Image 1 (spheres, helix red, strand yellow):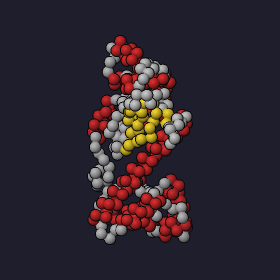
Image 2 (cartoon, rainbow, N blue to C red):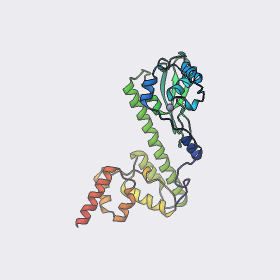
Image 3 (spheres, protein in one colour):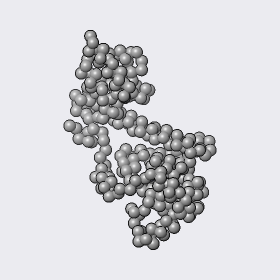
Image 4 (cartoon, helix red, strand yellow):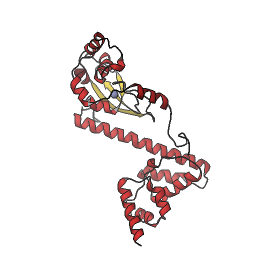
Length: 271
Ligand SMILES: [Zn+2]
């Protein structure tokens, strides 16, 4: 069994992460925002202090957001109004491991950071995509026009998908580069070009890659490797494969591809 590092997974901050997980049990919810919408930051904090509760860990997530956002906003006392001053800038970042904290709600385990900026003060925060949606922070289009809530959500989820997809491709390429170092017969360029062109490999290509990765003991996550079987040529490759070769590709298949393979297996069983 390869170590996590060999598998291409980053373990940075994992133990710290678990500590944070076990020490915090609060959950963000839309109900929380509705209940707390319009709650003013300082008075929420004042209330908390008056009741003897001063630790940020025991504040509600909307109170934490108010405490983080209001000092950086022009409106200093009303979270719902202050949020109108903020826009999602379209800048985002993949930390490659859930090691950061959302600068708006203090939620730990953030891997993908999205930047929001105050239109008046110019201040910015790096926050989780969930928070942009939950607090109804607007995005802007390419011309700088403010998008409505639905289009803002679409933009955030589009950007998040892009980050996830780029991360996946990076891991595939780093496995291929590791392979090229030890396997001189492996023509890495043609595989990388194909991946960049189609985002996936043909059954034959993937079979070759997985066989060579295993042969050289290079760890990989099969879910990072996608396969394309849209063209007849690609379907035929899968049809022609031996059962053991099909099984090796199975972990890389999508649900619908797995059904297609099960159909091929059933046909083979009938013969
Ligand atoms: Zn957050």
